[in-house]
Length: 102
Image 1 (spheres, rainbow, N blue to C red):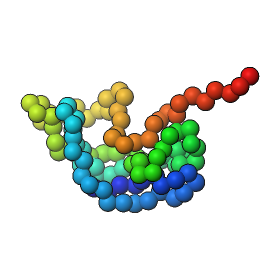
Image 2 (cartoon, one colour; image 1 turned 45 degrees about the horizontal axis):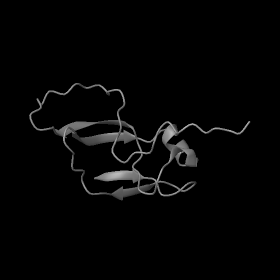
Image 3 (tube, rainbow, N blue to C red; image 1 turned 180 degrees about the vertical axis):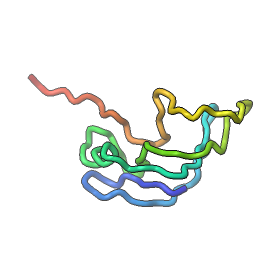
């Protein structure tokens, strides 16, 4: 699969080819047709509080086709983003709270 990955803080993102994902039980695989890199993705490359690590895949505004379903599931899939949507290997967003000493 093609992906845009985090390299290091204050460093441009990299365009890479990665192995196709293998879903765990209960997960789906989405063949992404288009994906946007927005301002929040770019902010994550500038602040260690987001917890991005080398190789994390960025981009959360996507459109695609479900190509692998969990065993026993119907091929009818609702076209909505479920609460708590997370891409595998994506950076933690929003960042953990940063507490300042009083």
